[in-house]
Figure 1 (cartoon, rainbow, N blue to C red):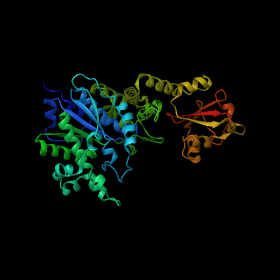
Figure 2 (cartoon, rainbow, N blue to C red):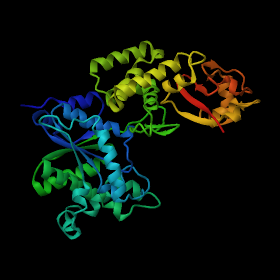
Figure 3 (cartoon, rainbow, N blue to C red):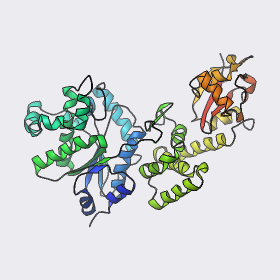
Figure 4 (cartoon, rainbow, N blue to C red):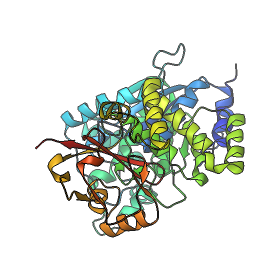
Length: 429
């Protein structure tokens, strides 16, 4: 029986940047085993990893079998694709530690118990660290000319850099091609996916399978996710947005998606949620007719936060958001309740003695907490009416904050604009 048409699903979601000839028909006619590689340079993936994760999840939902390679072997070397300089190499213990964290996150979107097509995680260190150098050069290396490797875009870009490219990273293409061959032999894998910068590595693997096994293998690369504002996707003022709640709180994670620009939100709904086309079309219509309500952004934030952190974390993030956006806690709640509700909101601790009269200048407080980059920016924000303290708009840029402004003498809630909040805890000492 022919598999449902997942290729069309990828197309309307804007997830096809390039693919090998005949892949559409093959996906219609067969259930394939497919894989994507994930970088083990940290113990957590970040939101930049979500598109490939969702690609594997969609393929699984259409009956194909997903494999995630967590590159314990290639992670010891480093992929030059998309890099301007050689990165630091990891030792095996660190890679092993990172693999454990990444596996947990992959389990959020992939079904490892699905009947017929359970997801699989493999570590390419299992075969790459066992390679016999002479045998590898004889059996694999002879199939790739230096001219072929130099023509790959990832290599060409690095050769143009002042530091060039080391032989270690130059060999990465061969190792990734060998990964594809190994997965073909062990699991019948005939489709590799990756980012658009992986096209050269993917086609090299497909060529190797054709040469050595006489079989047809395919590749599909996903688009580079960008923002229309020119900010690198997945980066905020606070840094990288991680999938690990210990690195990026569920509240901050929710706010990252809720703050999506109107021009990006429809694309992100297609990329990062399982919402169907009709639902997304409806959200797009609401964006056009009532953009100020941010219905599309809220649905995006809800769907992705639920997917990665679960219903309970989503409920906490939404509760914190609703209370903050309703005008702030002000005098309605005690310090304990405020801290409980806002447990995921970015926070700082400052000695209470600092707030004894004459208190802390509000412009200093805004810069200390990171809500403003400088005193002058803080003053501009206040003059523009964009700063709130415990839900009350501040109007005097020369104001000073004393402990009598704190809720129960313990907590201050600062707000910049509509969505950026920060809790200040007054501590003893």
